[in-house]
Length: 154
Image (cartoon, rainbow, N blue to C red; front, side, top):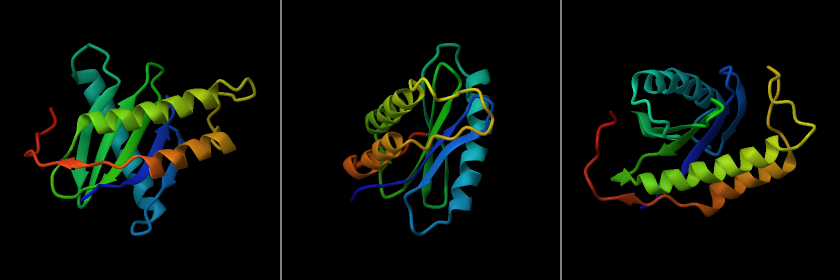
C-alpha cells in the first residue's frame, strides 16, 4: 500500500504563498490553501519554541482526516509543506526528507535565475522548468509506509 503526495506548497519568508500545487482530484484547491496557511503557524511555533539547532526538516506537523502534513524550512525562512494521503502505517522520515530535498533543489534552481525577484509580495514560482521538476517529484517518488506504530510529534 503506497501513500501519495496530494499537495506541495511553498510559502515565502513573509508568509505569502509562492506556489501551491494540488495533485489530488478528491479535495478542492481551497482545502490545500487552508492547510498551507494553517501549517505556517505550526512551523513558526516549532522554530521559536523548539531546540536552537537549525534542522531544516520539521517532520510531521499535524494530521487531519485522511491527510498528513509535513514541513521543512530553509535557512532563508522559505517554508515547504507537503500533504500526503494517510494509509495504514507510518511514513518514514527518510522518504519525506528525500522529497523535501528534491523540492529544495527545484526551488534553488528557480531562484538562481537572475530575472527572478525574490522579495516581491506578488512573486509566484511559475517557470516551466520548476513546474516540470515538481511534477516529476510527484510521479517518480512513491512513499511506502512502514508498519511501525506512529510516533507523536514533539
